[in-house]
Structure formats: C-alpha cells, structure tokens
Image (cartoon, rainbow, N blue to C red; front, side, top):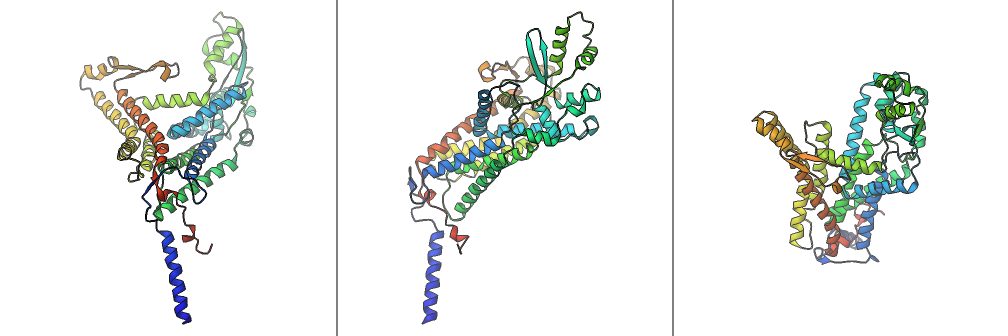
Length: 441
C-alpha cells in the first residue's frame, strides 16, 4: 500500500514536470501587446534587448582623444553619435577595430624601429591623438598630434627624449576603463544567450528583437579583443615640447633658406609634421571606414578576409530566424531576403570587384582596361560624404551597389524587429521553467 502510494506520488510529480517542459496548446496563437504582471510581457522583451544593446555599445566604444580645449558638449555629442552608429551598424565599429589592431600589430613587428618598452597600448595611445604638439603662429595658437611612426622617427633623430613618453601604467591611469561596466555587459550578454537557448530547448518562441540583439554579442566580443589595448575614454592628450623640432625639420625640408620669416617657416614645417585634430574624431572615423569599404579590393588582406567572415556570422545570426512566426507571410519573406543580403552582399561584392580587377589587369584591351577608369565616374552628393567630394570609377560601382542594398536591408530589419512586436506567438510571453535544469531549487 505504501509502495503503491509512493509510486503514484512519483508518477504525478513526473507528469507535472513534463507538463511544464512542453509549450501550451495555443503556443502558436498570435498575441499583441502583453502586460507583465505574470510572466514576461512585451515591455520586458524591449527593455532587456535595448539594455543589452546599449551596454554592449557603451562598453566597447573606445573614442579617440579630442583636441585640447574641447568642451564637454562636443565630446558627448561625438560619443553619442558613435553610439547611435554602433547601435544601427555595429559591424562598422568592428571594421574600424580590425583596421586599427592590424595597423598597430604591423608596426609592432619591427621592434628595432620602436622606442624601448613600446607596447600595443603605446601604439594605440599615440595614433588616437595622445601626443599633442602646440605652437604659435601670427594667426594664433595651433596644435596637432604625432603618430606613433613620427614619434619613433623623432626619437631616433634625438629631437624627442624617450623620457617624455608615458609609461604603460600612466596611460592606464589616464584611461577610464570601467571594468564594472564591461563585466555588466558580459553578464547581460550571457544572460540573454542563456535565455534564448533555454527557450529554444523548451519549445518556447523567441522574438526577432531578441534574435537581432544576439547579433550584437559577437560584435562586442570582437571589439573587446581588438580594442583591448586601446585606452578607454581619455579626454586630454599629453602635451609635448620639442624645442629642436623646428631646426631639424626645417633643415630636412629645405625651409631654412626660403626667405620666409620665422613664424611662417615654423607654421609650414609643423603643418607637414603633425596630424590635425578633427572636431568629431569618431564620426570622422566612421565616415572614413565607409569610404574605405567602397574602395576597390586590390588584394585580399587579412583584414578583408576576417571582415568578410564576420559579415557571414553577423548575417547568419539573423538567418536563424528563418522559420520564425511573423505577423504576415510578406514580412517573413522580406526578413529572409534581408538576412541573406546581410550575410552575403558585402563579401560577394568584394569578390566580384577583385575578380573584375584581375580581368581588367589581364589586359583584355586598352579601351576596356582604361575606359572603365576614365569614362565611368560616380560622384556622390556632398551631403552623403560630409562635405568631401568623392568620385568612384566603374569598378567601385559594384561595391556601391552592394553597400546600398546592405543598408536598405539593415534598415528594414531594424524596423521589423519592433513592428513584429504587434503580433507574437503566445509562447513568446511564457517564462522559462528553470526548475527543469535546477530541480532542487
């Protein structure tokens, strides 16, 4: 009797356990805006995803150093615009981080040309505007910064003492790397991944907003790695004084006997030696990255190959929602098309551009080889290039077409993830039964 009663208790508890694991009978019923007193609601999905995107973008965005004297409002505007760009197109920051890391690593491969104790952090600090030169002209005070390559040259010429360079500890002290925020970003990303995996395992629906947010996580991981040595949120550069720079540079440039006065010679020399600060450094970098992506692929480098692989991963995560339930069949079809565009458009256009260049360089005919350069020109409007006049030849038209299609697909998917919230499967609002994995809790 006792054994029979014990068996019934065990069987009934097993049945409840299995019932909790299975989705409800109307799991595929469409449901609109849902409040969240019991379980999770629409606002829970939105806030969880938006917070994950925000904290990933905020913790990974390593802005360049602004010009000395830049006010707080301009710094924040530059950072916020960069955050907006990262939220809309995180792959753009990945491309910038790729390029900066490979450039720094390439410079580090020739240690004999670098100052003693030079590290990747020194390399990034110099190239982000860390070492500032100031000089006076008849028009007023001017400033610019030295790149890492210029600093190494000046040290070899004894125009710059290595003692004025910051140590690694001093650079870390100038940076404001908030490891608490980075740890919070990692934990939030892991929690979102765990939620989506558990929901898939229990047959519960996942929204397209959550799936799209998952695509930000590999972006954050890649940027964490490639910008791991780049100082974070440095607001003021190191001011250098080079009393012999004018004399040495003037002698090398042939300006000492030009007949110009001292101020004009000094200004001319400094303008050729320093890199000018820009008003919005990160915005300018994002614009430059778009222009570089549109330039013809002359050869497949590590940057282009890894960037192409990353596009495959980034778009592939959106393809994971291939069989999701959408409010209408048209929206599902458009999502499928756009996810394929995100995955293949950029790598395919790069391959086509390179293949066309190989054909043209093969010398089919002089007319074809050079006619595509001179006769077919595409001039972008100034408002698209922030006042910079840019012309592209016929070869680049392939990449421009691929970029336009990519941007349109990306914008549609950003709108669709919120539009689809109006009608989600009812199981999307069911909470994960964690007792399945933690039976003793």
